[in-house]
Length: 355
Image (cartoon, rainbow, N blue to C red; front, side, top):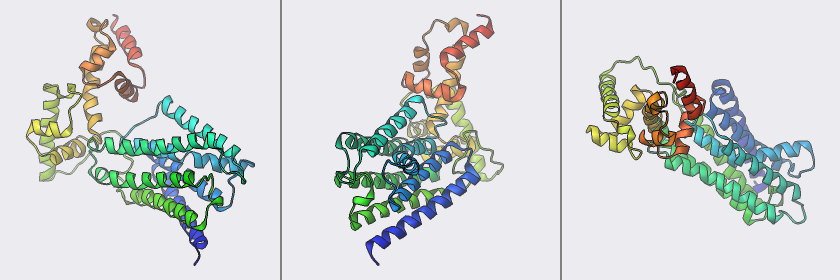
């Protein structure tokens, strides 16, 4: 069997896997943000596979343009998918979407300037490759940086291997294209084409099998606490520990330490870290340690913003005193929960209090 035939088989298998996983995500998780990002990512991968399989890689007809837009979005949606799934981000700000839009604009400009004779137009191709690689690397960094805060044990175990495998494949694909001065696979040799196809199958299989392998309760769960009716010995012990955690964090104001880690909190309580993770996740229903702490921080901030006696205290001071490491982190967390700005919240609260 020739490399060209193997390449075609690999692409067909990738499309079949993509279609299956997208269908299941739409059926079971269409309202969850991580599922939507996963669908967008897979549509992008599928667009790339279809475009290159059928030679629709020139910026000269509507179908080609649609497929190339999908291909140009892969790294961006990989970045957003990792953030929404592994870090439980509920929404993305204008800066994130602006970066995605800028990447698309540069990519489409490069596709439009591509010619079969000369290949890529370097002044646009190099920035495009840099943006694609940068977004893929950003996804890897998000997964690596947030691993300790992840309280979902199954997700924590797989996140590094999964993201490094899929992210590395995306990086390899981009490097192969850049080194060979390719915008599409049609100018590549059989060995290069097969290597790219194999990497695409690896990405697709990694994402698909990971998603399909998760229990329904763990995959794209909402951010509200879980309700666990079981009352086993382990559950009772976990409930007791969870109560200790809540009392300790609230009364000692441990959340005010912006550097507090779950390992440090476990040491303060004299408990093994794995038991603490299980209590905060399984009993209290939190999927991320930083989000758990931010709940206490935001409660303190909102109380201060509603207090007429503190109306002249700068919001930044209040946020830093409550344990937020920066104003940007605080603003993002506040808007995520309250869907408004801290200034607007303060104005409304003081007006309601008649201050």
